[in-house]
Amino acid sequence: MSNKVTVTATVNADSKKVWDYYNQPEHITKWNFADPSWHCPSATNDMRVGGKYVSRMEAKDGSFGFDFEATYDEVVEGKKFTYTMPGGRQVTVVFNGNNGSTGIDVTFDAETENPIEMQRDGWQAILDNFKKYTEAN
Image (cartoon, rainbow, N blue to C red):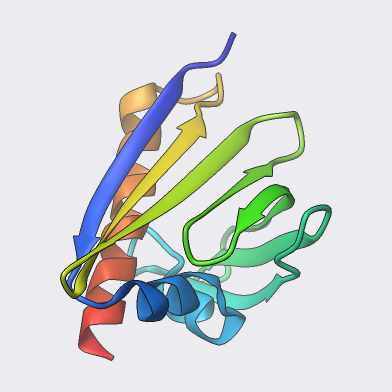
């Protein structure tokens, strides 16, 4: 029994740019962190059913880091994808283009070690960072 949590953002960019910036490793490394004291030094993305997504997330001071990884279950090019993280938690990301802007809904299974509000805030901060990066570039 998992708790599903959804975070959302509307990005002022067309859906193709938003899809590309969300999924291409050269962009992922520029926005995939929740706090400015962290960074994402590397990312790989084999975006196909059975393919792997891996991103390295680290504190800039080197005090802590981890690899975030997942395997794709579904990919609908330009529209949505679903992946499963180790331990069975799933994430679905949906892109909705509308007159030059794109809504993104990220729904994830919460883990049990941290409060749901903390998890929601962290995922929302990453999505907000994505929005800021995409709109500025």
